Image 1 (cartoon, helix red, strand yellow):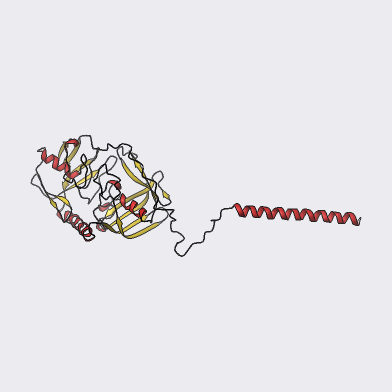
Image 2 (cartoon, rainbow, N blue to C red):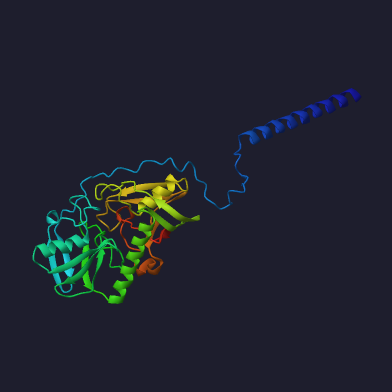
Length: 329
């Protein structure tokens, strides 16, 4: 009886030892194969909510433009006051060959073409202090301004130089009488931009760049912007556009990004532009993504800076700020 009892005890002890050993082995295997970044240690240089940038200088090359022929081709229509005029794009020559390549032109060039056709009497001059052409008179009347939108767009206020604004097919363009005080406020901002660029030896250095994304906010000061010739189909090489801000920040190791070229978007049947698809970990999806604005703080958002001109075709002089921000439509 005692021998059998001892043998049973030994068997139980062996079984318990086996169970414990198996448990230890399983525990070691689980620890070995489980992810090691569940609770990362945050250094003094990295805040808990700051985005992690993985090799920002190394970017995927932007997708190539599927159709290099982005020339305006269709007859254009312009409304000036109560009158409507038409023109043929192939007949228009730009008066800003320092910005536009042959075959491309601005909405100001459209006015010049209408003058050449004898449809209107246009008087204008180039103002070096503003780096733009100024309308003096149309048919002996002063104080003209314009409203423009592309395919799928809608009327909106803007303070952008008309001889910088590219014309493309399916554009709606109207010139109307504006108050002298509004025009003078716009002209003053242009002078400030030109002065800022001159003081920086013709470099574009933006005092404030802000990115308000879905999961993070970043602010940069005195950012030097360089041209990447992304749209050298439209613009002369070394022309700086708003999308160069994103590309320059990435080159400086401050963000990462993704671009996507769109032929059309939703109701906008003609787009043919690059969009900022992602910044760091936030990627556009559905009706949520990045938009932008640039200019003087005097004309923030719908007062003039936030216009539906794609960032790859918005030529910059030297704005006071530029902001990319996340929206859900």
